[in-house]
Length: 250
Ligand code: NDP
Ligand code: 8X3
Image (tube, rainbow, N blue to C red; front, top):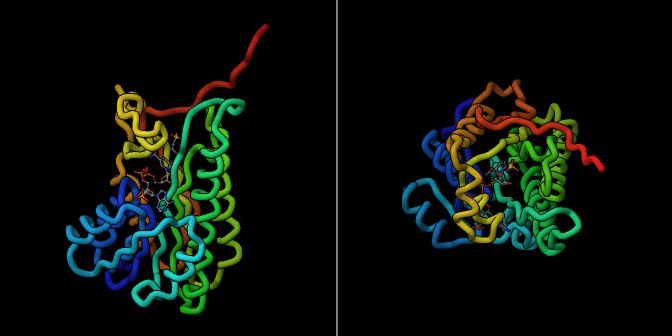
């Protein structure tokens, strides 16, 4: 499939994977519809990209704003939707983690993602073409200490994607869930509430994935021939692996 001429909406395009994906799809010829909260970043990216760009600053947790966006002219006909907006907050064990952080992760990674998807998929089905790409995580499949609610939100994204695929089979609308391991973006800075030193330590002494590595995979999935649906891509840095089962001995 060719990307030029398509309209691609990327949530979370102010940073990281969404930013790299927006740039990648634009370079391939798509018209970009950028969404994120930080208006200055959207303006800077739009200025950088030049033509074929529309941007809206909004919080994807605002269901009314998301529904209104789908009625807004440049956003009415979306061919490719990349749901990258999301976050992890905190790394405290389940008995000490913040309930507010849990709510924010659930509201953003799960509720907002389904609201955005629900706003744009009916138009795709009516036009008989479209592609929804969700950014899940290895954390949705492989548990790690203090990954509880973040991992659970990404398990939700995985299962929602797979079930969507069942509903949309034969409609011309494709669904892909890309599930990365460690990608060096602002992800850890956000997780540790702006503590850059702690965030940097996450990637110390190893080569993490880059946001561009993930944008590559989005482009790969979107450019397969129309009869090919890439369901799930799980990807990790070569230096990352899985932990052994934990056993607490008395
Ligand atoms: P970044 O922090 O660099 O980017 C997150 C993006 O999400 C920002 O553009 C941010 O924009 C946007 N966002 C967050 N909350 C909202 C909101 N309420 N409304 C609108 N936009 C929002 O992290 P990544 O690029 O790494 O993360 C992108 C996705 O990839 C997330 O879903 C994350 O869970 C997932 N992921 C990340 C991995 C990693 O190791 N980095 C690994 C696996 C998955 P703004 O603040 O301007 O609103
Ligand atoms: C982010 C990947 O391993 O930091 O989703 O949870 S991980």
